[in-house]
View 1 (cartoon, helix red, strand yellow):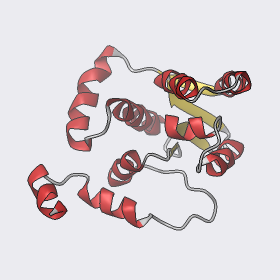
View 2 (cartoon, one colour):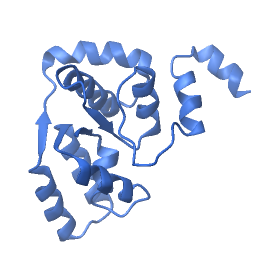
View 3 (spheres, one colour):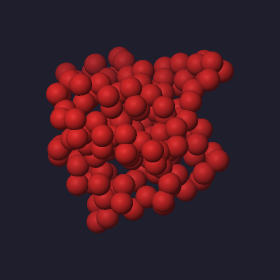
View 4 (cartoon, helix red, strand yellow):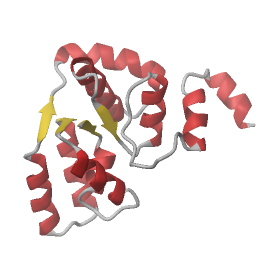
Length: 162
């Protein structure tokens, strides 16, 4: 199985989080692992902010050896910005999703591993493949709502919120 790692999933491999069991399952099932190079910056920031023990840093280095890193080139800047006007994601999440889409063109079986609900909602709306733990049944209700609302106009979103 070919997996593309978002930082939310990768950090769960290093720190005890609610998604750690699922992230570990994905890591163990994977045959090849890809990520946007920015994952390292975000992962290190998470370890710093949570005062991670030295062993966690060593473990990060060991895991990163296995991950093939992708870069965003200057040519990617405009397409990411244009796409994110619709996606409405945080900047780094837009970068991860853009890299995943680009890699998925070359590897049609590539699956996104992420625990970021906003990113997952957009990925599903785009018809991209999402990794799910064995036995996971379909979308959670919150993801269904987000996927449906991902492309709503701000005006409609305000009306719905009232």
